[in-house]
Amino acid sequence: MDYKSLGLKCGLEIHQQLDTEKLFCDCPSILQEREPDILIKRKLHAVAGELGEVDPAAMQAALRGASYVYQFYNDSNCLVELDEEPPHEINYDVLDTAILLSALLRAKPVDEIHIMRKTVIDGSNTSGFQRTALISTNGELKLRTGDKIGIQTICVEEDAARIISAKPDEVVYNLDRLGVPLIEIATAPQITSPEMAREVALTLGLLLRSTGKVKRGIGTIRQDLNVSIAHGARVEIKGVQELNLIAKAVENEVIRQVALLSLRDDLRLRNAPYPEKKFYDISQIFTTSQSKIIKSAIEFGKLVYALKLPKFAGLLKKEVSPGRRFGTELADYAKSMGTSGIFHSDELPAYGVTFDEVMRVRAALSLTDKDAFILIVDLKEVSEKALNAVVDRINLAFEKLPGETRKANSDGTTSYIRPLPGGARMYPETDLMPIVVQSRKLSELKKKLPKPPWEQIKQIEKKYKLSNELATELYNENKVQLFEKLFDLTKIEPTIIANTLTNTWNSLNPEVELSAKHFLDLFNALKGGKFSKEAIPQVLEAWLNNLGKNLDAIISDLGLEKLSYADLEKIIDKIVSENTKLIQEKGESALQPLMGDIMKEVRGRTDGKLIMEILQKKLGYGK
Image (cartoon, rainbow, N blue to C red; front, side, top):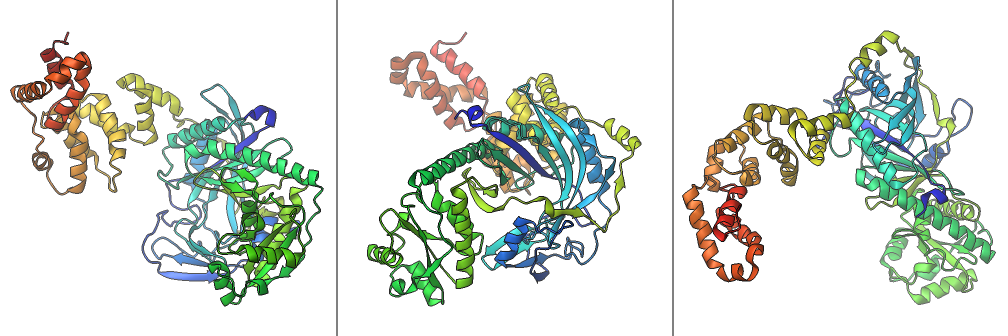
């Protein structure tokens, strides 16, 4: 797609957990897997902000009317997380890290830090709001491509509770993550392509790691995207977890907005009328239905409601992004009101609904072939809220794209969550005093500025003659210090150490960590000729399964004692003699298949380079 002509604008917000205690109490920021000590059940309500307005996102959450259950742990939660006690003094280690990052991004710190409350009543905060503080503004990020992206704000805020399960009427959260400090970096909407969005996220991630204060692992960093095109709308995509999905999410959102603008044009060409908020109880048509979904719902006292959509035939199945249709978009709006989904005429008969039942619905609603309908099967109160939300969304389709907050899906598509929040949701925290940022403190922190990550990677690459890929992997996985220590103590070839700590280690997908001592013993054994470098993966895997065992015993059990030169020659002679026909037919091209056969035979007991040297000499292809 020509993103420039489409008028793509994209901004990025990165939320990175810091490896400290929580933001407003001394509780440890650890995740819990055991059964909770206490369960607390609550409801939350939307209230007006300082200007007397109620935030639209908060209002929608309140209309849903769900209850929230919180899992509490005595050893990692306190009354602050339960909102039964005021917040304690802010974590100054977090503030120092945020100010340090501000200097790295050339952002200007504020003179006075004010803690603010941001209304959030989806249950993820027990208080009904999230505490956040602006640290600096007007920064700049320089990309490796030479492009510059403005940094609008750098904030610190408390992370939300971790969702465990969700039903239409009840959501369960774990309080272990609530209050974990986050640094939030928001860029200006100056990103002009999906690949640039990925590059911005990668560069900001490297800068965050350079502070040495961030948590690592899945879920510790989350990216939100703000995407729009000309004549479209700003859409906030929440929670893109994987770096490689960022470009895909931007691309798919552009596709979605283009498709929805095309749908608007189709509606205008058809001269379709706006649907009425008039819903029909047609439950009697389905009293003997064989559809398991409908039959089960009716048995529980639910009803079948229908909505008429004049001149809409075929539009509900219009694809708006890969694998998602306009009907799916409407289903997301219905689900946000607590129902499980919708049926629509463009996909029926299906799900056990018969052709006869479809025709009876059409007759009951007096529809023509050009018309469509939507069905919702639920309690009357839930169905009316869901159908009202669907009608509101359809009415917008005639005019414009709605600004929305959407959830990032694992395939790069998105799903509707709620409307974009408004300005009414922010108001001052009344339990904490403002914090004056002292110039002396700023000067002290600036002296601690680390080198930019790309400079550190280049330095590692040059000093140890590593590939850029290996040097980057060491840096990204926070293993530079371990790598340098192992090299200083063993003088093993740097590429072998780096590859073992990154690619080999990751391929094993270990559930436990080995200490620096384990790796030192491993490389000392390699240096002492107890096994060859090709056997490193085998040794590591066996050791991980038997951590209480001595390394020499592991090597012995695997049968990896290094072959003598004479024994290796015998093995090579044997395999060469068994493959004379292959050698005659392929000549020098036979080296690789022969090499593979020999490697299988020796099973990591000697060096691959030595095998190739002997083999080439035997076949007359050596230097």
